[in-house]
Image (cartoon, rainbow, N blue to C red; front, side, top):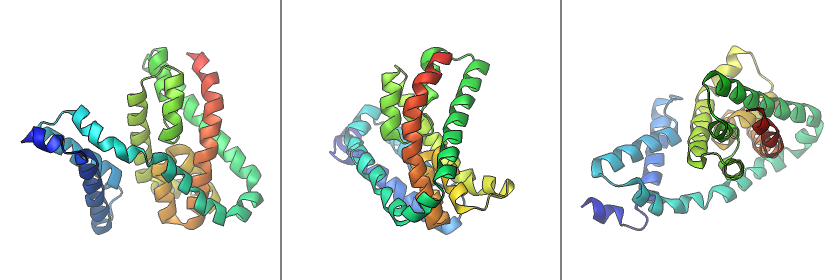
Length: 230
């Protein structure tokens, strides 16, 4: 039975999308940040694979089609950015400074934790691109000989955590400027965080979309530099 289900061409994609839809409905009903649709879908997929005893490789072979949409979906984030282009020009210096600060803070934190926990070079470079979009981060991790699968896992965890705590952090530190909120979320928790920024407001979503692109470019440059520190 498990082999029959696992051999279904789009089994992985179907269970992933169903899990995500369940997550969306739970989030709308209970209004809890922890019920992030991506987190819920991951848990549902894990439960289904465990109960049906389906090997991960079989699941991945039928779920990989979703990843083909990753790059186009990332590009679509340019739409709210285009709508707020005048705002982008008005706050260009602040946006550049905020993005650079976010990227350098992320990499400095990874370096510090790598030293504290005694990570080797390969493990260290695996986590350097954890706060940017998967499409770019996978290439960086592979180029630096990191563990690409772990890089992807860290990106997911970073995005979900950022989405969950974004509003709380902004309230604690009394950050109310929409541009600042958007840049902070986008540079720290990429596309997953950007979905949260879009829920907060259109300006926040647009600035977060911008931060994804600029953070990715900055990370490409600075990752090669930080890789030499350990």
